[in-house]
Length: 279
Image 1 (tube, rainbow, N blue to C red):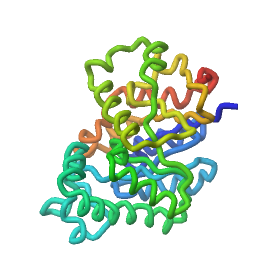
Image 2: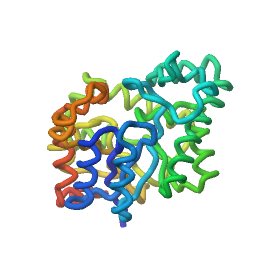
Image 3: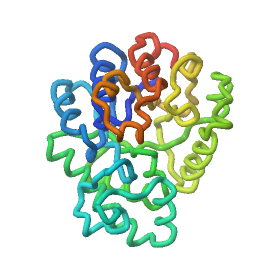
Image 4: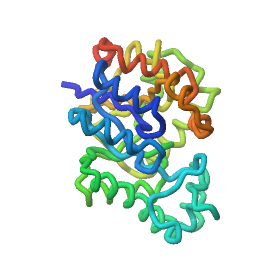
Protein backbone atom coordinates (compact mmCIF):
# COMPACT_ATOMS: atom_id res chain seq x y z
CA UNK A 1 0.00 0.00 0.00
CA UNK A 2 1.28 3.46 -0.89
CA UNK A 3 2.09 5.54 2.20
CA UNK A 4 1.13 9.19 1.68
CA UNK A 5 3.02 11.94 3.48
CA UNK A 6 1.40 15.37 3.15
CA UNK A 7 4.13 17.72 4.35
CA UNK A 8 4.15 21.48 4.89
CA UNK A 9 7.51 23.24 4.74
CA UNK A 10 8.57 26.50 6.40
CA UNK A 11 6.88 26.08 9.79
CA UNK A 12 8.17 28.85 12.05
CA UNK A 13 8.56 31.52 9.38
CA UNK A 14 5.41 33.47 10.20
CA UNK A 15 2.13 33.39 12.15
CA UNK A 16 0.22 32.75 8.93
CA UNK A 17 2.30 29.72 8.01
CA UNK A 18 2.05 28.36 11.55
CA UNK A 19 -1.71 28.80 11.58
CA UNK A 20 -2.16 27.18 8.17
CA UNK A 21 -0.17 24.16 9.31
CA UNK A 22 -2.01 23.81 12.61
CA UNK A 23 -5.43 24.08 10.94
CA UNK A 24 -4.27 21.84 8.12
CA UNK A 25 -3.58 19.11 10.67
CA UNK A 26 -6.68 19.75 12.80
CA UNK A 27 -9.19 20.04 9.97
CA UNK A 28 -7.45 18.75 6.88
CA UNK A 29 -5.10 16.08 5.61
CA UNK A 30 -1.71 17.41 6.73
CA UNK A 31 0.25 14.75 8.62
CA UNK A 32 3.81 16.10 8.51
CA UNK A 33 5.68 19.38 8.69
CA UNK A 34 9.24 20.70 8.39
CA UNK A 35 10.19 23.16 11.13
CA UNK A 36 12.78 25.92 10.77
CA UNK A 37 14.75 26.25 13.99
CA UNK A 38 16.30 29.71 13.53
CA UNK A 39 13.43 31.94 12.44
CA UNK A 40 11.27 34.50 14.21
CA UNK A 41 8.24 32.32 14.96
CA UNK A 42 9.91 29.03 15.85
CA UNK A 43 8.83 29.32 19.49
CA UNK A 44 5.21 29.82 18.46
CA UNK A 45 5.48 26.82 16.14
CA UNK A 46 6.88 24.62 18.90
CA UNK A 47 3.93 25.49 21.14
CA UNK A 48 1.55 24.45 18.37
CA UNK A 49 3.44 21.19 17.87
CA UNK A 50 3.37 20.31 21.58
CA UNK A 51 -0.43 20.07 21.55
CA UNK A 52 -0.41 18.13 18.26
CA UNK A 53 1.70 15.05 18.97
CA UNK A 54 0.18 13.29 15.96
CA UNK A 55 1.77 15.76 13.55
CA UNK A 56 5.12 14.33 12.44
CA UNK A 57 7.90 16.88 12.42
CA UNK A 58 11.20 17.15 10.58
CA UNK A 59 13.86 19.86 10.55
CA UNK A 60 13.91 22.33 7.68
CA UNK A 61 17.62 23.13 7.88
CA UNK A 62 18.16 26.79 7.10
CA UNK A 63 21.51 28.14 5.93
CA UNK A 64 20.31 30.84 3.56
CA UNK A 65 19.91 34.57 3.85
CA UNK A 66 16.63 36.31 4.59
CA UNK A 67 16.02 39.66 6.20
CA UNK A 68 18.40 39.85 9.19
CA UNK A 69 18.27 36.06 9.64
CA UNK A 70 20.53 34.92 12.49
CA UNK A 71 22.22 31.52 12.82
CA UNK A 72 22.08 29.46 16.02
CA UNK A 73 25.80 28.67 16.02
CA UNK A 74 28.43 31.07 17.34
CA UNK A 75 28.97 33.54 14.49
CA UNK A 76 32.72 33.61 15.20
CA UNK A 77 32.87 29.92 14.26
CA UNK A 78 31.05 30.30 10.92
CA UNK A 79 32.58 33.37 9.21
CA UNK A 80 31.94 31.99 5.71
CA UNK A 81 28.19 31.93 6.34
CA UNK A 82 27.57 35.32 7.95
CA UNK A 83 28.02 39.01 7.24
CA UNK A 84 29.53 41.67 9.51
CA UNK A 85 26.23 41.92 11.42
CA UNK A 86 26.21 38.21 12.15
CA UNK A 87 23.36 37.46 9.73
CA UNK A 88 23.30 34.63 7.21
CA UNK A 89 24.41 36.13 3.91
CA UNK A 90 24.18 33.52 1.14
CA UNK A 91 21.49 32.18 -1.16
CA UNK A 92 21.55 28.80 -2.88
CA UNK A 93 24.13 29.84 -5.49
CA UNK A 94 26.38 31.40 -2.88
CA UNK A 95 26.45 28.17 -0.87
CA UNK A 96 27.07 26.16 -4.02
CA UNK A 97 30.02 28.43 -4.86
CA UNK A 98 31.51 27.99 -1.39
CA UNK A 99 31.13 24.22 -1.66
CA UNK A 100 33.36 24.33 -4.75
CA UNK A 101 36.02 26.90 -3.86
CA UNK A 102 36.62 26.07 -0.19
CA UNK A 103 34.81 22.78 0.43
CA UNK A 104 36.58 21.70 3.63
CA UNK A 105 36.10 24.95 5.56
CA UNK A 106 32.60 25.38 4.20
CA UNK A 107 31.43 21.92 5.27
CA UNK A 108 33.03 22.31 8.70
CA UNK A 109 31.20 25.59 9.27
CA UNK A 110 27.92 24.37 7.77
CA UNK A 111 28.08 21.39 10.13
CA UNK A 112 28.30 23.69 13.14
CA UNK A 113 25.10 25.49 12.16
CA UNK A 114 23.25 22.35 11.12
CA UNK A 115 24.19 20.64 14.38
CA UNK A 116 23.06 23.68 16.32
CA UNK A 117 19.65 23.50 14.65
CA UNK A 118 19.27 19.77 15.23
CA UNK A 119 20.47 20.06 18.83
CA UNK A 120 17.93 22.83 19.40
CA UNK A 121 15.14 20.56 18.23
CA UNK A 122 16.16 17.78 20.61
CA UNK A 123 16.61 20.27 23.46
CA UNK A 124 12.99 21.30 22.91
CA UNK A 125 11.97 17.63 23.16
CA UNK A 126 11.05 17.38 19.50
CA UNK A 127 11.79 14.06 17.85
CA UNK A 128 12.42 14.81 14.19
CA UNK A 129 11.65 12.02 11.75
CA UNK A 130 13.20 13.61 8.67
CA UNK A 131 15.70 16.20 7.50
CA UNK A 132 15.30 18.55 4.55
CA UNK A 133 16.25 22.17 3.97
CA UNK A 134 15.07 25.62 3.02
CA UNK A 135 15.63 26.10 -0.72
CA UNK A 136 16.78 22.44 -0.87
CA UNK A 137 20.38 23.43 -0.16
CA UNK A 138 21.03 20.05 1.48
CA UNK A 139 21.06 18.57 -2.04
CA UNK A 140 24.32 20.42 -2.80
CA UNK A 141 27.09 17.79 -3.00
CA UNK A 142 29.06 17.90 0.22
CA UNK A 143 26.11 19.25 2.16
CA UNK A 144 24.12 16.19 1.19
CA UNK A 145 26.75 13.80 2.52
CA UNK A 146 26.88 15.87 5.69
CA UNK A 147 23.08 15.74 6.04
CA UNK A 148 23.08 11.96 5.62
CA UNK A 149 25.81 11.60 8.25
CA UNK A 150 23.96 13.80 10.73
CA UNK A 151 20.70 11.93 10.14
CA UNK A 152 22.43 8.65 10.93
CA UNK A 153 24.18 10.07 13.98
CA UNK A 154 21.00 11.55 15.46
CA UNK A 155 18.80 8.59 14.54
CA UNK A 156 16.66 10.57 12.10
CA UNK A 157 14.96 8.13 9.75
CA UNK A 158 14.77 9.95 6.43
CA UNK A 159 16.53 12.61 4.35
CA UNK A 160 14.51 14.21 1.57
CA UNK A 161 15.74 13.35 -1.91
CA UNK A 162 14.52 15.23 -4.98
CA UNK A 163 13.51 12.48 -7.40
CA UNK A 164 10.35 13.84 -9.05
CA UNK A 165 9.66 12.51 -12.54
CA UNK A 166 9.37 15.31 -15.08
CA UNK A 167 7.20 13.28 -17.47
CA UNK A 168 4.88 11.80 -14.84
CA UNK A 169 4.19 15.25 -13.45
CA UNK A 170 3.74 17.15 -16.70
CA UNK A 171 1.75 14.39 -18.44
CA UNK A 172 -0.91 14.69 -15.74
CA UNK A 173 -0.91 18.39 -14.93
CA UNK A 174 -0.35 19.83 -18.42
CA UNK A 175 1.00 22.92 -16.65
CA UNK A 176 3.92 23.97 -18.82
CA UNK A 177 4.48 27.23 -16.97
CA UNK A 178 7.39 25.57 -15.14
CA UNK A 179 9.39 25.76 -18.38
CA UNK A 180 9.51 29.55 -18.18
CA UNK A 181 9.12 30.44 -14.49
CA UNK A 182 12.21 28.66 -13.18
CA UNK A 183 10.58 25.47 -11.99
CA UNK A 184 12.18 23.36 -14.70
CA UNK A 185 15.63 24.84 -14.11
CA UNK A 186 15.27 24.21 -10.38
CA UNK A 187 14.20 20.63 -11.10
CA UNK A 188 17.17 20.03 -13.43
CA UNK A 189 19.67 21.30 -10.88
CA UNK A 190 18.25 19.30 -7.97
CA UNK A 191 17.65 16.17 -10.02
CA UNK A 192 21.21 16.45 -11.31
CA UNK A 193 22.50 16.66 -7.76
CA UNK A 194 20.52 13.53 -6.88
CA UNK A 195 22.29 11.68 -9.68
CA UNK A 196 25.68 13.13 -8.74
CA UNK A 197 25.15 12.19 -5.09
CA UNK A 198 24.38 8.61 -6.16
CA UNK A 199 21.47 8.31 -3.77
CA UNK A 200 18.17 6.53 -3.89
CA UNK A 201 15.11 6.53 -1.68
CA UNK A 202 11.92 4.58 -1.21
CA UNK A 203 10.07 7.91 -0.91
CA UNK A 204 8.98 9.81 -4.01
CA UNK A 205 9.02 13.61 -3.64
CA UNK A 206 6.34 15.55 -5.53
CA UNK A 207 6.71 19.33 -5.46
CA UNK A 208 9.59 20.81 -7.43
CA UNK A 209 8.11 21.51 -10.87
CA UNK A 210 5.07 23.25 -9.38
CA UNK A 211 6.55 24.59 -6.14
CA UNK A 212 4.00 26.72 -4.20
CA UNK A 213 1.44 26.00 -6.94
CA UNK A 214 0.13 22.64 -5.75
CA UNK A 215 -3.53 23.35 -6.32
CA UNK A 216 -5.97 22.93 -9.20
CA UNK A 217 -4.69 20.67 -11.96
CA UNK A 218 -1.34 20.28 -10.19
CA UNK A 219 -3.04 18.06 -7.61
CA UNK A 220 -5.90 16.69 -9.71
CA UNK A 221 -4.15 13.36 -10.34
CA UNK A 222 -0.74 12.63 -8.80
CA UNK A 223 0.93 9.49 -10.13
CA UNK A 224 3.75 7.82 -8.23
CA UNK A 225 6.28 5.52 -9.94
CA UNK A 226 5.81 1.89 -8.95
CA UNK A 227 9.25 1.48 -7.32
CA UNK A 228 8.39 3.75 -4.37
CA UNK A 229 6.55 2.70 -1.23
CA UNK A 230 5.96 6.25 0.01
CA UNK A 231 5.22 9.62 -1.51
CA UNK A 232 5.86 13.00 0.09
CA UNK A 233 3.79 15.90 -1.22
CA UNK A 234 5.76 19.05 -0.41
CA UNK A 235 3.50 22.05 0.16
CA UNK A 236 4.00 25.62 1.39
CA UNK A 237 0.62 26.65 2.83
CA UNK A 238 -0.02 29.96 4.53
CA UNK A 239 -2.89 32.00 5.90
CA UNK A 240 -1.89 35.18 4.11
CA UNK A 241 -4.55 37.23 5.90
CA UNK A 242 -2.96 36.46 9.26
CA UNK A 243 0.41 37.62 7.98
CA UNK A 244 -1.12 40.76 6.50
CA UNK A 245 -2.41 41.67 9.96
CA UNK A 246 0.98 40.95 11.55
CA UNK A 247 2.95 42.63 8.79
CA UNK A 248 6.72 42.43 8.84
CA UNK A 249 9.04 43.43 6.02
CA UNK A 250 10.70 40.00 6.19
CA UNK A 251 7.46 38.38 5.03
CA UNK A 252 8.06 39.82 1.56
CA UNK A 253 11.49 38.15 1.45
CA UNK A 254 9.82 34.80 2.06
CA UNK A 255 7.06 35.56 -0.52
CA UNK A 256 4.47 34.96 2.17
CA UNK A 257 2.07 37.45 0.62
CA UNK A 258 1.52 35.27 -2.46
CA UNK A 259 -2.00 34.04 -3.08
CA UNK A 260 -0.51 30.72 -4.22
CA UNK A 261 0.32 29.89 -0.62
CA UNK A 262 -3.29 30.56 0.36
CA UNK A 263 -4.43 28.21 -2.40
CA UNK A 264 -2.03 25.54 -1.18
CA UNK A 265 -3.67 25.87 2.23
CA UNK A 266 -6.94 25.00 0.50
CA UNK A 267 -5.24 21.87 -0.88
CA UNK A 268 -4.19 20.91 2.65
CA UNK A 269 -7.82 21.24 3.76
CA UNK A 270 -9.17 19.12 0.90
CA UNK A 271 -9.91 15.72 2.41
CA UNK A 272 -10.40 14.20 -1.04
CA UNK A 273 -6.86 15.04 -2.16
CA UNK A 274 -5.19 11.84 -0.82
CA UNK A 275 -7.61 9.77 -2.92
CA UNK A 276 -6.12 11.39 -6.03
CA UNK A 277 -2.61 10.16 -5.21
CA UNK A 278 -1.92 6.70 -6.60
CA UNK A 279 0.43 4.48 -8.57
